[in-house]
Length: 308
Image (cartoon, rainbow, N blue to C red; front, side, top):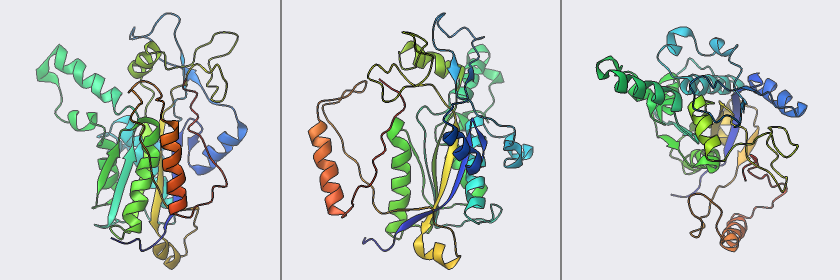
């Protein structure tokens, strides 16, 4: 199917350690100081001298976006994702109470899924299977937040969840924009979510993925340092409203960005746990992609989490 239109971004919703909303997020980034807190180690999962800090969300304003009557049936990641989606719709000049319809899609990503509700469900099953709630399982799967967004917004089209670690958010946005450019959808809610659960934090630390206080450095991510030693686990959700340029123009929406094209590459020499040796393969793929779409790169942004 031929490309028929540009996909434009008209709304942004964020639940982050800086608080709720785009303005708080931008101000927090501009300040350049992460908001970190101590992780809960009471369950005994953590090593004695392991990582201790997380960038946990500030949920004090979340109730404004996800009322208690809705929140009671959602896990924390679902509440974050639905809250961010509602913020994005308002930011785009849309009414979050109006249903988006059958040509609206949801495309989300997550690095680690739903560790909190999964741990609770497994505890119930192992302690006494008869006490495990059947309502917990649907919230334990990675696509639960995307499903909750669709229920909230009335998005009746494609519903996707990508589990591709750092590449996931861009894949989710790229797929949403592609569906719109090819005329298969008019509007999309695309983004990502994750949570700072103690069990997940302890597992990542035991695998050596998290930054620690050592060698004279505080427990902070240092993404471009040659001796970087890991990232700090963060939580929250970000959702974008993506729609056709014609639709945005008709309602006089503020266009934040255009998604002209999206693409990816694969290095078959890379194992699941490390970089491969196929940098030339990926570079050639990227160069061909940019040439094919006549894209001039004015800024390149690395996925800079601090990971080794």
